[in-house]
Length: 427
Image (cartoon, rainbow, N blue to C red):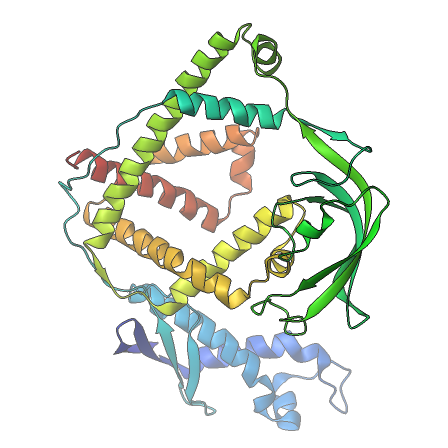
């Protein structure tokens, strides 16, 4: 096998790969063995005809597709390894020469990891935030605990008020015709939360239990559904239940109910201590992030669009997973908020770009500084992961794939690289 490499653009290379005719013939054998059971040649039982008879009857082209796939996959992987290339996308394959008895030649156009030109990353000057926990911080935390321990109490002697939680049935229509996604029964809604289309929740205020009312709204002009954009709609709404939030009084009894402390003063002191620890940890994280960001900002790197899009896809999958834990999915979220997927991707793009560049910069610093996960660090990390999942480490090792091992080692190297930046910073 021989390989010629041509740099097409900043992050694209074109490989011309020549595979020996004997090797390609072996790939033709593999293609024949894969497909022989489907060939039906007169004079032979189905699948029993030899390769030369199959090629004579059907033409050798019948084996080309699989033979090409076998030859390209093996030769491409070898060419990538031998030339220390790091693709970030699938290659575009073009066949140059495919003739019986001759060497097989193809080209592979592939996007590779960009060159990273490091700037200053040691001795960076970054200011560390001072940690201060105020009385207001303690009171706000108390109120959050109070909210978490609130109860929803049914009320029947008054109409809906702003802030109430209502259970409703509704059916929406435009010009008297119901539309898809506009109907639900037993839906729980916090009035004033801004969950529904503007104007919907306000019109529930003043309605009593079992009232059936018409709610008139107009879908926003930027609503995600073309059929509903800017359209006036009527929702027939029935009020099934009204609930009001009841907050517990903050006193010694409250403190003993929600904590191991007997008095409110003891509980407040504990809150202050924990908030201080959290604030210190947050200040440390921000200090690290600021150092890394400065090192990234000092670096020059032309990032391929495909890497940004791939990170965007990952981020949106994570968002969809988070929403599913809350009983929704990304599609439902877009419908509820009236947002377009293109708008969401545009909003996330800058974060995706920053994450990709940060990863590339940290990898380059690790390479320059020869930061490699030691066997001891790797084993310690496995112990931590196994403990987290309550699983024997030897049992967990049996299920690790190559990608898993590489990810664990990369995580260790990333942490050690950030540690190096922090230790060498001026702050």
